[in-house]
View 1 (spheres, rainbow, N blue to C red):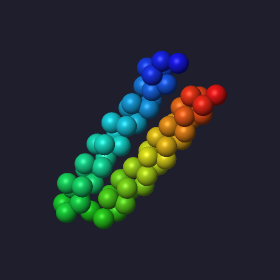
View 2 (cartoon, rainbow, N blue to C red):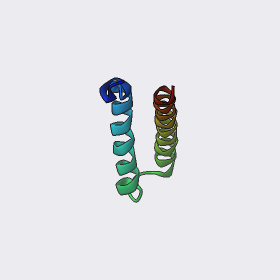
View 3 (cartoon, rainbow, N blue to C red):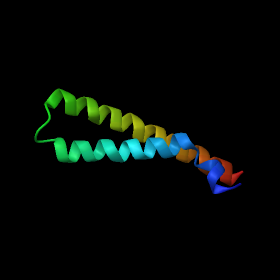
Length: 64
């Protein structure tokens, strides 16, 4: 299989969103309110879970 087929647009968009959210959390932690930071951390964790799930599916495809 081609690498382009495995890394679909959803995976790439999710990766960029995760990078963006982590940067917001890192640089905005002193100026943002605590409830907003908690929401951003939860969204980042869910997004990271999606990325791990997609990576495991890609690995399964390559092992078969």
